[in-house]
Image (cartoon, rainbow, N blue to C red):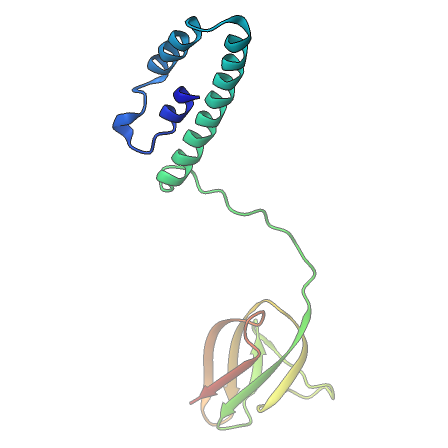
Length: 154
C-alpha cells in the first residue's frame, strides 16, 4: 500500500523516478512477506499500477490540451423546432429577405416590417431588408435558435 501511495504523491520529487524504481520497490516489499501476504500485496500492486496508469493518462489529458488533436463533437441531426421571429425596422415597410429569398406573407404578398414570420426553422439565416426609400440593409447571419426578434434602424 505504501508503494501505491508513494506513486500517487502530488509532489513530483517524492514520487518514483520511473516505472523501474517503482518495480524495484515492489519487489523489495514482496520479498519480506509470506505467501498469503505476498499474494495480497501482488493484487494491491497491480491495482495500484492500474490506478497510477489511469491517473497519468488523466494528467496528460488535462496538462496539454493544445498538444492533442481536437476532435469535433459528433454531429447529431435533431429535428429543428419551428420558431416565430419578429422583424422590426425603422422606418417601417421594408421587405424581409432570408437567405436571399423574399419572404411572402400568408396572402402571397411580400412580408413587410413590422411583421412576425411564423414557422421558421431554428437555424442561422442570412438576413437582409429592402426599403423602398432607404435601399438594402444587409444584417448578415442571424441564428434564430437564439434570436426571436430582429431590429434595424437605417
